[in-house]
Image (tube, rainbow, N blue to C red; front, side, top):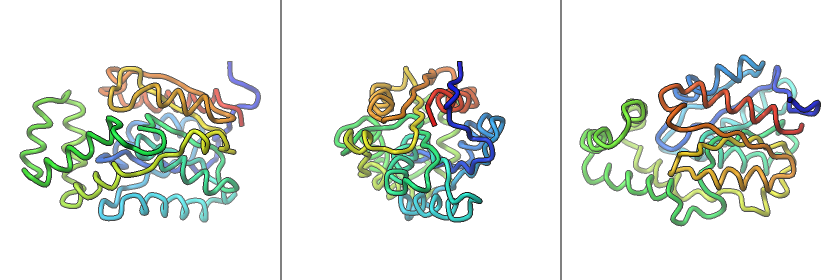
Length: 241
């Protein structure tokens, strides 16, 4: 049952940030439809791999400045979730809510699986180039994932290795910071995603003063990306505004 205090996203400018190596095209296909069906006005931000992190934060700033209320719902996937939470902590008066999809780690990245993967892939790209690294990735990945990454990697080449290394060094909000997050926090976890541990997402939702968690399976939303967007709507409906 939806809480009477659930976050309303009808008419709310909703800024979405992609994960490392991914892009706005994926965000539009996976998240935008269900969020727009719920009434949100979605802006999917394209990556600028030569200035990845700052370009994302700048895009949220611009969207908030242009929003009729001066406030936005800020969200993202993986790295995008991390940066959305950081932006909200720095801009509490401009944040309606935060949508954190598959948050990759808490605090310093250290040896988090997503950070290790990004650093490893950056090294392969530098050593072997885009074509060979993409071919190797295809040989060990599900078809849907290989197609997604091949498309978005090519789009971000040749700055992609720099972007991956920058992402892998990003510091996420700490437990203490999440405990003082003023905005509602809707979190989505994939229970079978080893790169984005579900335990991280569960911690984020539990630590936030107004947090809620929805779960989905990677094996389900991978080939049917709108299922990820549906989980986002579920989490937003569960969190208190």
